[in-house]
Length: 178
Image 1 (cartoon, rainbow, N blue to C red):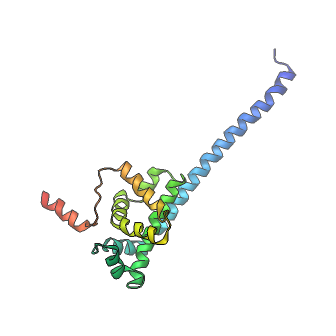
Image 2: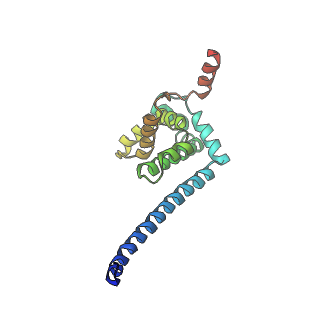
Image 3: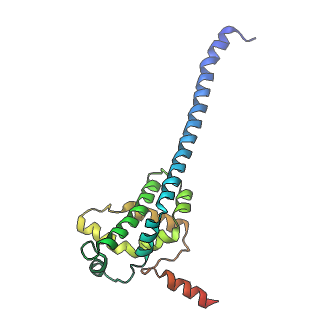
């Protein structure tokens, strides 16, 4: 038989259960809200300015040394091109930071940021970033971007890495193979 004393003892247990359910629902909602916020932030970056900067950065492939890059696209020789290069690197660095800090789901990140773009951009600009790490004596310079690249390579190992981007050349190679 259930007594009043038994009922009074069960009330705190029910309170704890209700609190746990409420906490898990709040946590799930917060996670979804963060994911939605990330999607909306990414959607804002799909502007004409972003597309223009990305297209220009992918064309910056006519250099073989760090010195040659800086003579063509450096902050002093070509400030506009350098600004675009910095902008695109920062976009991928931010995505890498979200992934590194586990603030965003990897599936979501790689849905929003094309893995081939991440891999090819890092592969092409890695010598510049590594040189800057040495020059600035800052080993973590663009570490999140590198983390994003490594995660993309793990998840998508078949995407080729190339020193030169060669988007148009790649497409022509595929067309002539048919």
